[in-house]
Amino acid sequence: MKITIQNIAEWQDVTDKIKPLLTKKILTLKGNLGAGKTTFSQFLVKSLGSQDTVTSPTYSIVNEYKSQTGIIFHFDLYRLKSIEEAFDFGIEEYLESGNFCIIEWPQIYEEELQHYDHHEINITNTETGREIEFN
Image (cartoon, rainbow, N blue to C red; front, side):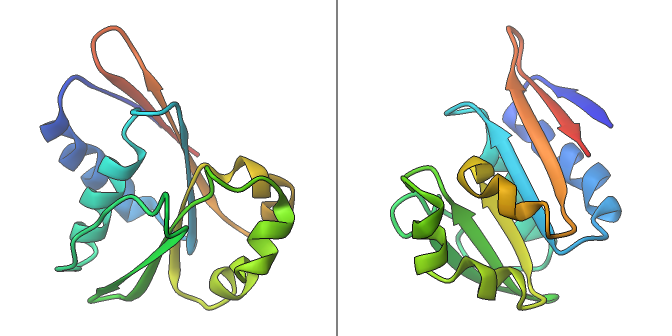
């Protein structure tokens, strides 16, 4: 599925279209800096019933949010230099917890993600907005 948006308010429409399709507990988000990965995460976490403030986990690596559907883990692997760093903070335990996991910048862990059933969203900046592709 491909969706094109021109402004931030349209992220809610994206969330409304994608949320019913989320049958897997892991969602990866790819896109350039400023593409909207965290913005999408904010809309999605809120739509899953969380009252928590959603921020980029760039420095903390993982944020945890409480929601009506359970705990949501939100990762940002951008600063990781190696896959060993992901193992060191226990990413496998998070992914195998049965809780919903959102992973921004999953590329460093991509080989391991092949072992997990997951969805993927690619966000591309365009001249007029964003193009979101959901797999």
